Length: 367
Ligand SMILES: *[C@@H]1O[C@H](CO)[C@@H](O)[C@H](O)[C@H]1NC(C)=O
Ligand SMILES: *[C@@H]1O[C@H](CO)[C@@H](O)[C@H](O)[C@H]1NC(C)=O
Ligand SMILES: *[C@@H]1O[C@H](CO)[C@@H](O)[C@H](O)[C@H]1NC(C)=O
Image 1 (spheres, helix red, strand yellow):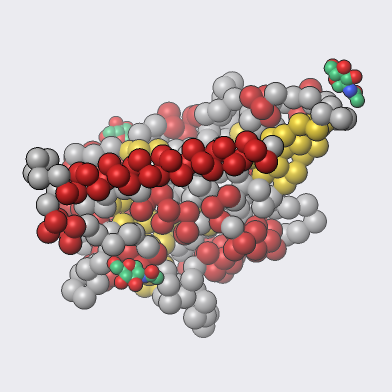
Image 2 (cartoon, rainbow, N blue to C red; image 1 turned 180 degrees about the vertical axis):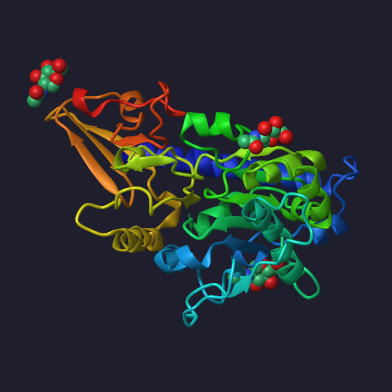
């Protein structure tokens, strides 16, 4: 085992050296003529948390029961942005929470007056940009919109965004786990609860023509669909993210959380709708418990590791920071990577038939 690790290390080192020498060659080669020394100066600093702007949409009524979710990931002094409420909060505000704003009154603006809520959500993009991405705040590279019951994993979001060029058009987010939600709303949209991530140029273009956007799609009733449509009009489309989770599921989601792919966990949503994710803890305690693991190492959160114990023929599956499953038999990885169907479909409508989910599952009964 040890020698294998050594070999790997040596391989990595060699590759590293090769890539360094390649880069060096490119930089100094006069023949390439592309990368000149002065262009080095304009390579932007790596993206960090200070380049992200968060816009959270909530309602005064639900907020009291949901603030623990926002509080679990918000970092006062480090995360930037605001929570947009439909009216002034009735309680004193805690400094551990994002600052609140009351959403603009849109009644005068819209053709569609019967769905102010959907318009308020979309308009929130303009409102957060107007205040936090103008004037002295020009370092914004990404705008992240979420709900008051979204839990963001901000270090992982930074890690994913740092790989992308924020000066280009990007629209990132998560789709619904429930197949019919994609059909009823859109398979091409980022679901707002999982978080909508836009590069600055997209958010800016959207904000600049917000009135036009809301008027064009005033006949629609879903804010996420309208956002998607307006972004499509700008010229870009969704890049779905494996780690963004709308959690359009009900009941016990432990099976879902225990089979997380090896991609950074970006968000969890609907913790109010599902059962507490840890047995014998309530929803808020469960959230805090999960975030304690995230504080130790966010990058590995939930990621599934599967190994076999040859002496006993057991299989062990670990979702980092969350669960460990032990099977007294050998199961292939491909089998355990399918979530154990501990949960229920999002909609209880009786006319809905299989398949329910956007992924394959395995039944708990045939363990
Ligand atoms: C984030 O990057 C900016 C440069 O854009 C830098 O000034 C700042 O110190 C960085 N912040 C952290 C916390 O690393
Ligand atoms: C979503 O937007 C598309 C494109 O405008 C529209 O055809 C569809 O009906 C909309 N869906 C909903 C649920 O509003
Ligand atoms: C493990 O499985 C192998 C292959 O089926 C079998 O030969 C062996 O006896 C098993 N070992 C135990 C401890 O059950």
